[in-house]
Length: 84
Image (cartoon, rainbow, N blue to C red):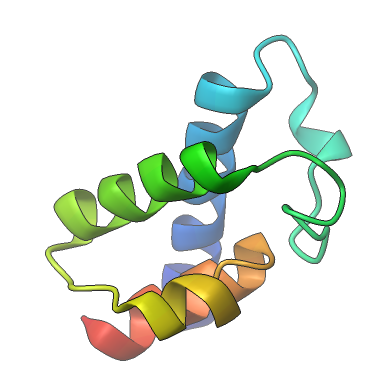
């Protein structure tokens, strides 16, 4: 399962880099970096990321999960893993 979680983290990281941090090195976006607190995500980009996660992984993210489980890449990967 850890390999599956690592694949999820890597895919989520790549999406964030492509959409919100073009040109940034993947090594600068760690699994535990606060995405909103660090300014990487704002409300609109969080909504875009939630939509991407729902469509890509065929899950539904409720408003509570979006506010609590989208803090870090690790949080998002764990949410997806729990809901697959």
